[in-house]
Image (tube, rainbow, N blue to C red):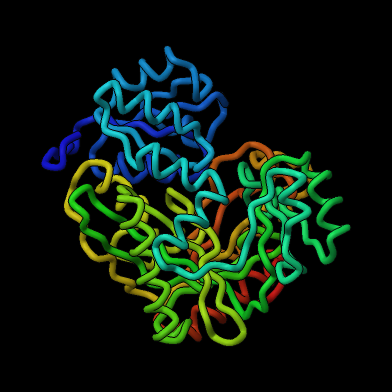
Length: 393
């Protein structure tokens, strides 16, 4: 698609991946008047069940990709581990694709990702690439203790092992199958935050406010967004860093950049996600434009308006742990969390993803809380957490 091309409502948009992010993209596109196609092998995929069309096939199936290209004016992705080759194949069939395969491939490889951060001048934790026994022997002592992460296919804390000594490192690499890895030095963290930017083909960039995040067991648990959730200096550094990373990739689409704030107040980038992000789900209720609408706009070449946070917001991630183990979400009321108590609280907005089975650690939905002040939003969020059995924060 040329820089000047605009895809107007009434056209058909595609998404690779049928999870909850794809579902919310489909909802946003349909609200704006677009038809949608989802490519996902799961017949019960959350996005596939609400889309106009569901191509049930593997992401690398050439016939499915041809079908998707024939149906769609443009295609995006809802997860970073979609085969980059599939995005390239779609682009060769004159289908608009964003983000591009080149951008996604960087996010799929931690070594390339960190090299990109360095090239953009955005600080990251000291690290070393580990692919051979020789590199293992050459690891410098100052990188320990550290976290060994697989270079590919790691998310939500998976594919990561903490190591204190060289012996730990060797054992951890063996445990991970001696696949290519990145060893990151452990740093004294104060908190975590993220920035979501949207960038057009012409290079126009807008961003949401910086999100302050709390993770538990490697999975996002709480996001809080309001003026003053971070110092002005830290927030500005995070936004500048995120914009530099997007520009360096010549990125088109919605991009989330995750950061660590260290105990000395300095900021280091952790990783990027070339798609909407869990920490941006509050935008559905707290902003005048959501991250998913901006995903549609960047894909279609529509104008990007700077998002406005109209309400202090908290987001609680709803994991399958909140349901009785193995209870289907469509089961009796007593087999589900007490939604009636939660929804009796002012400013609560429930978003469930349509998944048919609750499992521990599985993202089943999220709860957004909006209020006039951060204090009011926090109070209601804590009440909701107590109702659901979520630890206080």
